[in-house]
Length: 200
Image (tube, rainbow, N blue to C red; front, top):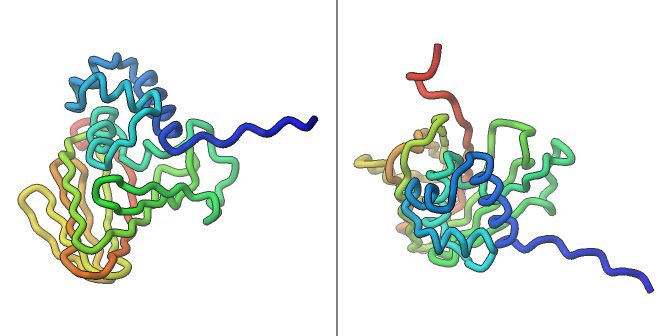
């Protein structure tokens, strides 16, 4: 009788494996990570066991505590098999709170220091991240492809129409809002660089 091949891990399992690996690589206990990111120890434990469907806001807190961009939490620990990221293989994830759909466009692993994410943002959706500084500094550019979004970075407010692009550093609270009745589509390009203080 032919054995069935193992099914691929669920998205929650992928996030669980990634959070565990990043925490281990930084030699952080559950308590230490909870202190760093402001998420309870019990919730982190549930996420690491794949027993929770965390929201984007919660995952951003974890990413801040781990010093990585949110997109990194959806990657595989294994290096990418190819520098080509096929559309059929690109991971999609829907935020259970706002309903926004994000897709990791770039090949995973260490193929490049640049990550590209595409987001479909529903009408009226709002997501507010309690983003904090990371080391190395994470730079991000948000390029609106269709529709309109309002993006707040700290105290600065930006209304972005199709074709507009905003550059920012992930070191302060940010929020996204779609004020229209149409789904907005935008791309996020992410990279990191050492802070000025650490450059020689």
